[in-house]
Length: 450
Image (cartoon, rainbow, N blue to C red):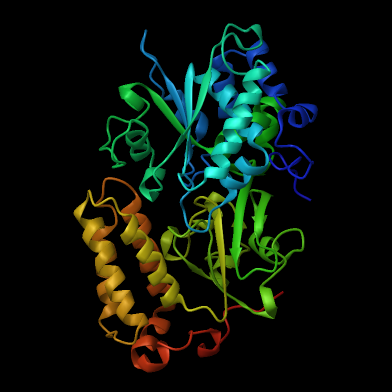
């Protein structure tokens, strides 16, 4: 059974309160950090841990911290990105709901390491229950002396604020988040300068995901070397996976990175297999913005080896045969699911959420939505597949922020792996409007349940 670093006490009654969290060792890592470690030593521990950003990009967290500029007399900020907007992803909301003090403890340690005296948790606007939970937890921590002036007699001061967002997917991009936090329209900034040089209010800023900051707690408590022993290769530690779709046991799971993909899907410890006795058809492994994979490619690498739940293994072979860990938003599609319909649904989302700043994204997402709409509604043409691929190539890599790539990759990969299904929607136009296209249309099933 995998070791739980973040979810060990998640089912303890009252763990969302300060007293219960403290009784389970909560805030011990703050005590250790402020009394025995310097800010630079904390950064080094995070570097040694190999922790990679859990919001989607997977960039080494300690390295990101080390880029922070430290000009004399200029404020520095830590901003927690809790604008969890990726379709299929809900693990950050889970943490904030059930164990909010873990995030607050991580914010205190991380802020101390970065020299930030004011920090923010930017929460997606629709998550009002989580905002209230965090505000209550912050008040509890402050009353106990873990926030405010001279924390634990260390001489370190920190004020922590929760800021509701406006409910825009684009604000999950760190520079758009900073624009929104400053009270402006949430449009991504052109980089450079990067936030580490000129971020919030033009000051050096680090933006980290909820899970990334929460992971700092066990890293400081147990040491970076201990954390690095978990996982595989450069994918160290544990990872929260939001598992949804056609699974027997959807939910949030903490896995050791390097777990077998088959074990994650079929073992009783995790997802328990595919619901209703169906077969697995395809997987979106890291949220709707990553390339979709047929079941056989999700379970096996290009070398026919077992694929692992890690940053490297999921990307094996590049996007031709691979996908991305992303934010850990795992969506399983059973044999009855229509790939065309689901791709259209994703594209509708990205068209709606595009900020409109970049022409390729603003126009291209709309074009893809229209073409997929007509394919799904019996009005498609055989040339539509090549048109969609061409449009996706025109978007990818040609926008200020990654939203364009996020919109392009699912479309291009769906056509690459399921082109016959798209063609079926053209040749069987009337039937396509009334039924899904399932595994029965394949000469050979993609996968059978273990």
